[in-house]
Image 1 (tube, helix red, strand yellow):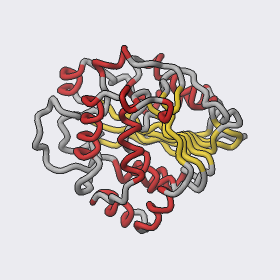
Image 2: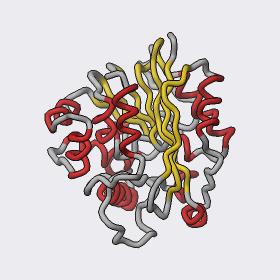
Image 3: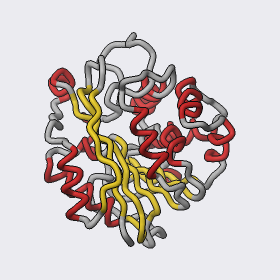
Length: 274
């Protein structure tokens, strides 16, 4: 997703959407821990893709007008400093969104692609602080010490299908916060989006919160990858929340400026009465 990036300087065939569309159908859907997957099972091509994506979109300077300010302010206001946080479709970005979330306990990073989580785990264990992280910390009134504190929390990495009904063994009591930043918009259509949304709602603890963002692809990007998600809207997210009995906390559509791949992003947060 277009968040913080240098000027476009690589071929458009490189990592853009953070989604291995061509490999999607061949990936296992059952729950596994990343640590259960041997390094020899990981694809070098997929690892390179996600490292490219991390450096392309979550490394350089923070670019205004891409929706990131609204997402981080939403997470800061409604994330609730969770003790148990599940991040769906985590890819390589969980540590970045933690700046707004301010977690205080365990973090479950969840993604269908093990290579994405492997890159995330390596970055989390490093001392690297990319420029956009530093700028976002300043934007939210935080310091690098806050990132280091999150790095020291209890992290686990879950390889699973975040768009289908799911459970994480040992976490049946639910999560204080479930986030889905850029995840549900990969669903094939509005019906599949509702399934993914409900699955996340089912994983909430009493008084838990569900927060996320859905990027609406441009016509150019739809032509490139064949995934048309223009079914996304603030009303769709709100409808799914009402069906699940959640209360709206924030729902807005943010127009994205000067980006060839995304037209807008829907930013939302909903709460459970418990």
